[in-house]
Image (cartoon, rainbow, N blue to C red; front, side, top):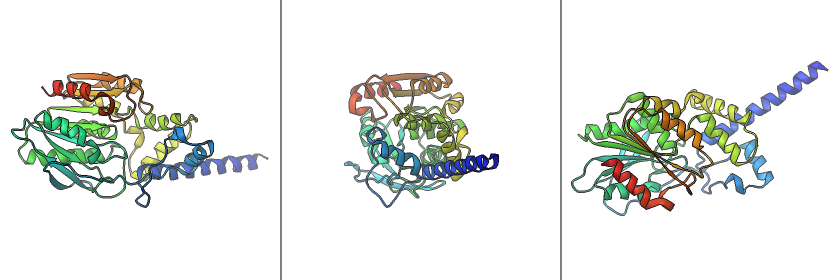
Length: 307
C-alpha cells in the first residue's frame, strides 16, 4: 500500500515538473510560427484557463510593423545577442535617452515616448531586446540577460562621446536597467522606470492571481525551471534587491490598478533606492502605456526630472 502511494505521489511530482518546464519554456521563448496574441487570462473560460495552466501559453515573437516618421539611423550592436536600434536626433541636443521596452514589446511601441523626449531636446536611442523586433533570437529572460544589452547600448553612446545619458525602461525594460545599474554602475545622469516587478517569484505569482488560481507550487516550479532552461538562478533576479545599489537619480512611475505589479513591490523598490528619487502614481492606470490616460502628467514629470 505504501509503495503504491509513493509511486502515485512520485508520478504526480514528475508530471507537475514536466508541466512547469513546458510552461517556463513558452514563457521565455517567443513563438515565431504564430501572429495572434493570447487572450487576457480574465477573458478565458474555465477550460481555457486549465489548458493554459497545463500546456502554457504560446506568445508570438514581437515584430515592428512601422518605423519612425522622422529621419532616423538604424544601428545593429553586438551584445550577448545582436540587437537592433533606432537613433533619432534633434537639433542642439541636451543629451541622449535610451529607451527599453517591456515583455512582449519592441521598440516601435515606444515611439510616442520617444517623441516626448525629442520635444524636450534629447536624442533618443530605441532598442529591441533579444527576441524582439529585428534583434537576434526568440529568447526573453525578463531582464536578466537583457541587462547586458542595456550596457551595450550605453557603451555605444559613450564611445561616440556622449556624456549626458539617461535610461528609460518599462516593466521588463525597467528590470533590465536596474540589474545593469546594480552590476555595472553605469555613469548616467538618471533613470526613468515604469512598473518594475519586485522579484521574479512575485511577478510569476501575479500571473496566477489574475486567473484566480492558487500560485503554489506552480509559480515556484515555473521560476525554478525558467532559470534552469535559461541558465541562471531566477529566484535571485529581484529588482527590489538591485535597487539597494542604485545611487543615481530615479523617477519611478506606477499605475494603481496594476494587477501584475503590486503597490507593495513598488514601495519596496522605492524605499531601497539610494539616490535622489521620486515616485509618481496614476490612479486609473493598469500595467499599460501611461500616455494613454496620463500623457500631460507623464510629460510634465519627465520634464521636471530632466531639469
